[in-house]
Image (cartoon, rainbow over all chains, first blue to last red; front, side):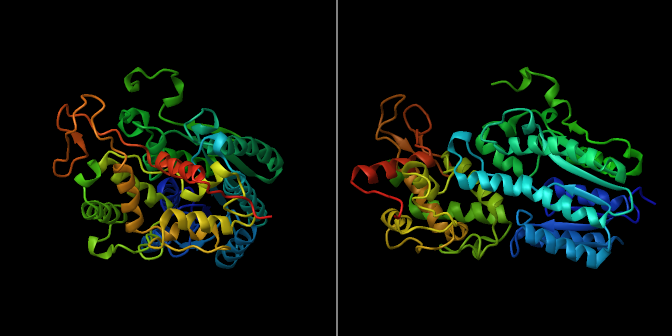
Length: 257
Length: 191
């Protein structure tokens, strides 16, 4: 029996990329899954539904729920559905992100709103809605962050939102100390996901970096999973860097030029 | 001229292929006026994938920003998109000036979020064509006027082998907007 057997887990933005791998990992560990995707009618809906079907065929419970989590009402509706389907929530993985890729000087007011609504408000909405469903049992919240919270990356204002959320992780962990709910962050390094397509447009050559510069999706998901188990119940308010060592060195001679 | 080295038909075939490969669909499904979003279920990350494939193929840099974002950067926020995220009259005017009557239509009050759905293979062909058209008459490295295109390759100098220096997609749009302004075109906030 897996360490998450009988637990219900929501992973936001889990139709593809890292969110998808985290959802698969939690499912393998025995959790019942709520997959979330933003947009109805697109490819991500098809991908989320296909994953839900795949997990169900393997004997887990899984549902895919559409919700644009930047919208408070949409988050409330999603949690009503989770309550109706499962009646509880034990694990919340805040993975979804969406941001303009622009220099700070080029950010319009609309871009700023997009940043905070999709990467800060959204996560707070989810946490607030999740708490009543986590009542009376141990619970785990994991926020998926990136090295952009600590380092400047080209055209990556999302990093500032990641930093804000990492600070919130600590704040929230303290507030929930007495409720047996852990809140932690996992700060991922460079990942080979769809998002790399974005990065390579703003950071020419990123796709030619040596393999050692990247961290395996499975390795990041593995740490997220660990933080969602009882074994990690004393880790609280931490942001754990999982980057295959990328951020340990200021200079990377092998990748220069 | 360099742009005639690669015909719109050739660009179209490459656009069709890039879309089909990125979305993992058959090329037959891609028609010149298919909406990438509405008809082919593309999402924002897919656009980036498609652009990247075209960049590799033609050695160009596709625009990172939408036309109306450039309008707002140049003429000021609120000029093309109002507070509620909808297109202004001025946005419609400048849109029509740029795309002409053959381009996809917009109207005042249309949500900005609906604009990406107007992108079709035809629009991408236009963008690639505009960038290729920025190729100078002669090679800046060797001075020869000997641009050539081997099958499936970017424009290269027949004299020295250098890739053609092409303007980036965002610069093409910015240059058009600056010309528009120089011609007396203006975009101002509705009072």
